[in-house]
Image 1 (cartoon, helix red, strand yellow):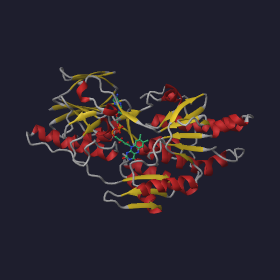
Image 2: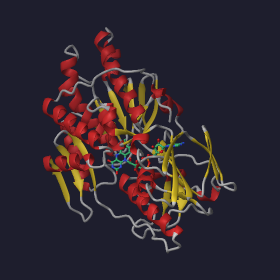
Image 3: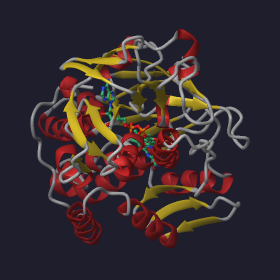
Image 4: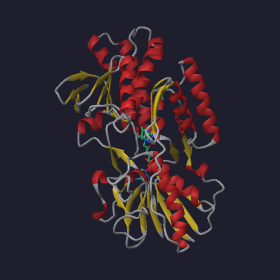
Length: 423
Ligand SMILES: Cc1cc2nc3c(=O)[nH]c(=O)nc-3n(C[C@H](O)[C@H](O)[C@H](O)COP(=O)(O)OP(=O)(O)OC[C@H]3O[C@@H](n4cnc5c(N)ncnc54)[C@H](O)[C@@H]3O)c2cc1C
């Protein structure tokens, strides 16, 4: 049996592991820093107390029950010892015949220490819980302060980054402000204070069609979100956000949805690391200048796909398709058959702007918005949720939450500290 070590159990890693499960030619160990897989596109709904973290998370050990050739190892990559074919994690050493790197990305603060220390990133479940606690605690503090300026700071929220995550957080917070905060905190008549959405480019939802961008702008403006484009967030200190044009916004909450950088993979040849720290791979996802190491998903950069000469966007579908193709290619490698090159099959993109308001860009140029787009968005986001019990719980949570506009998940659990995040 060939030993495959997969580092990272996101979309790419779990699709690879599940495709090779029960294949008697392979013995697989999947390594992850968390003991669960989660669904990043919905963490903004956890952050805004709309769904529970367990709705979109699934334990690896449960996922691999009954798959005898797949083991789980809770740990974090420390070093790849290429010559010895060994990976070192913080929990021990693992020998491999094939190593697959699928660790995705982490938040990029572009070197700004103030922002790194004080802003709330939106990358994983811990980030979402920390933000949820912080928003609820800020509202509690706002109800008790007698200082009008302090109250304004506590209620204002600034979101840096007008991509899908920033747009979805802004839309959800505006709904939360109107439907929930104003009822839970009757003395805060305006609910959450001003919600600002800041982006350095000239449009929201950058990679989507112009129609989607304009719809996002229209819907969020109608909901009272203050949108500032062509402007960067340059600093965050003493609860004041400073913008590139020196505008200052007092706020206790800066949500950072502004950029990612690939996770580090120490021990790889320097020649294989390229822009955004992504690992350069060939058309079969083999890492440049290595023999038996592969990288898939957000962590890699592949420029061999003729439709994407600058590399693929960092999206779930690409990670899934690369994981599935690599599983087939590892089988082909063992059978000494020719490998298949990766070519991305674009299934379109979508974003939920607010309740009943979504946009969908179809691969061949079609566009849909409004209620039907929102229903499509719900359906498409339900399918990949791990576990049928989770799918059912998420669907019922959504039905109750959207019908009542008042889910009951506003619990301040654990600590407010944003360093609750282990990753
Ligand atoms: C908030 C948010 C919203 C998004 N919305 C969308 C969307 O709507 N549509 C879309 O297509 N894409 C979306 N994306 C992007 C999408 O989530 C990624 O493209 C996708 O998750 C990439 O899959 P991956 O398997 O490469 O990496 P990930 O899914 O990021 O998985 C990486 C795994 O590696 C593990 N890991 C990290 N470091 C280590 C380490 N040192 N040692 C061991 N394990 C480690 C992590 O715990 C994680 O399980 C969103 C991303 C975010 C953050």
